[in-house]
Length: 246
Image (tube, rainbow, N blue to C red):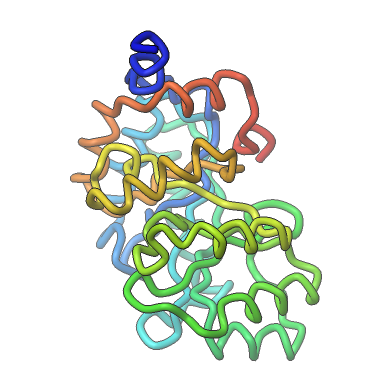
C-alpha cells in the first residue's frame, strides 16, 4: 500500500526532448501579454531550444476586447522572429497558430467561414474565461466542430469554477474535445485548486497535449527546474501525448 502511494506521488525531472513540440506559448513580440519585444522573444526561444524542444507552435491570444490579432499580423510577427533567430543562429522550428477566446468574434468568423489558425490540420487551441463560467461553453465548442474544426481546450484545469464538477469535464471530453494541460499546473504554480483539477484530469486520462503556456522569463525559470508526477512521466515517455505528431 505504501509502495503504491509512494509511486503515485513520485516526482521526475522532465525530459523535454520527449515532448518535442510545445504547442501553447506567447512568444511573438508585442501583440499580447507575452513577450513584449523581439529581444525577449529571441531570448525565450533560445531557452526553449536549450531545454530540448525541437519545435515551437506559438499561440498569441485572439481575444477581441483586448488583443485584436489577425492572421496577417501574426504571420508578419512570425517572420520577424524567424529572421532574428536565423541572425542569432538559433536552430529551432517555429510556426504560429493562435489561442482563441471563444466569444462573439469567433462565432462571427465561423459564420463567415473565415479560416482559423490551426495548431495542425483542423486542430484549434481554444479557451474561456478562467474567472467566470461561460454559459455558452458547450455551444461554442459544438459550433467549432460543426464548422469542421477539432477544438483543443487550453488549460481546463485553470477553470477553478468547475472544481470538483467532474461531470462537466467528462461531458466535454465525451463530446470529442481534446484537452491540453499547462505543465506548470501540476507543480501548484497556479494554485492548489488548479493542481487538484490537473491531477484528477491526469489520472483519468483526459489530456492529449501538454503546453508551456509560457508568457515570460518567470515561467521559463520554473520550467527549467520542473519536476512532474509519475503519471505524466509515463504518458510522455510512452508517446501517448499528441505533441510528438505536430
